Length: 212
Image 1 (tube, rainbow, N blue to C red):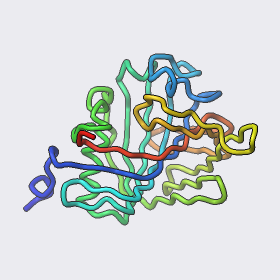
Image 2: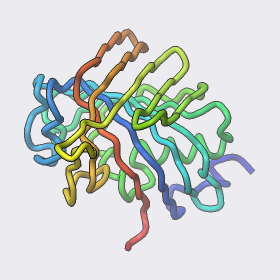
Image 3: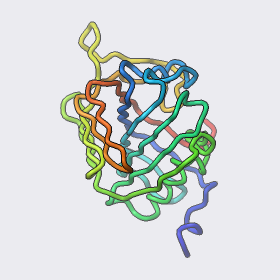
């Protein structure tokens, strides 16, 4: 039995965990509140993100404990599409988990990420590489071997707690910790990005393809 027989695109899936994202916006990303209808601050979006899955499955395949990342290059407003994307899955993940995450993150499995099937015009593929997703104090330390080197910290508010965007309809999550990149380097596919000091986001994920 091959992977396609073990995993069906229509299988129920769910992911709960945390996502950390860094992008090239000079100040906080306008896409969160505009839902992709306003252009990024630089007129285009370059971004990478990493996910720590605390609980998850795709059909009978467990995704719990798996870490993955992705990059996206978007030429204008998010809703106009023509995204270029790539996926990175931790090398400790099983072949089944890597296949499942490929289907999820290309939109083929529907649900929370289903729009990616329409918006992503070019998929550069999936690589399995060592991924580190650690929390040191409030800072998230992200390392995707030879690709991403990041340190993302929430922005402090008046009461010294983090600044939070709450109850939005943003596709990633309704509540976003407004953050900033202390360090953010991405190198691959001829790209050499440095987003230090620029916009970042941290949020809790609750994704899936089942009606709630």
